[in-house]
Every structure is written in C-alpha cells, then in structure tokens.
Image (cartoon, rainbow, N blue to C red):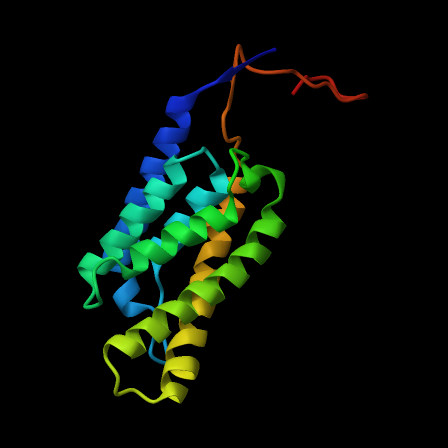
Length: 185
C-alpha cells in the first residue's frame, strides 16, 4: 500500500468547510437562538480548521471566519477575528490532525475555549456599548450562545473525525479477509 500526502486534499476540505459554515451562518444562524444567544457557525469553522491542523492555514481560516462574522453582524469589525485567531492558535499550535487522533478531546477542549471566546466577546461588546445589565449579558447571551456553538461543533467534529485527513490510498487500499467469510472486504 502506498500512502501519498496530498496537500490539495486538505485545502479542498478547508474550502468546503468554510463554504458550508458561511452558508449556515447566513441562512440558519439568525433563526437558531436560545434566549438572546445566537449560534456562531464562523466560530465552529475556525475551531474545526484548528483541530485539522496544518500550520498557518487554520489561522487564516479563523481570521477570515471572524472577519466574515464581523462584517455580517453589527459588532466592531475585527473583534471576532482577533478572538478566533487566538483560539485557533491555542487549540492546535502544531501540524497534527487532532480530529482523527482524538475527537473526544477536541470536543472537550472546544467546549472550554468556546466558553472563553464567547465570554470575552460579550464582555468586549458590553464595554463598547454599555447599557445591557451584566446579568443579561452572562445568562441570556453568553451561556446560551456557548451552548449552541458547542452543540453545532459536535456534528462537525464527529463527521470529520471519521474521514482520513491527509492520507490518500492509491490502488484501493489494503484488503481484509475475515475467517469463515467467502468474500474479501
């Protein structure tokens, strides 16, 4: 069996991930709300790209995702982009594909970082435009938005952890035969 490292496959996967998340952010996110917290598919895109690894590419995906979110919302431009780049760097500073290796740890780490990013984002918005009570910011925006973000992260991690990240087998791969079976799989 020959294993080929295909850089274009990683680029294609990141491009498809970005397109899917951006379409979901535009079409579905305004309607998915719990209390006053809305889901952020751009955050999900940045986190999944960070879990995939790949050097600098996840940081660019995080920046573009954050900038896209800032441009379609009524918040200061660059705030979410900054937070997502920092979060992507924290989640996977190496070149390892954590989705395939340890999906459960990705979900756990993602939950903690989602809580931190959403809290910083809500507190920065509170500083920029005071007027909302702290109770509303924490319990009606931060916690519901964090829960929705994590619930949307789960299917992406589970689906993408089942696929091979950078390995392309040529020639059909290895054949396995099971004892007592007539056909080879």
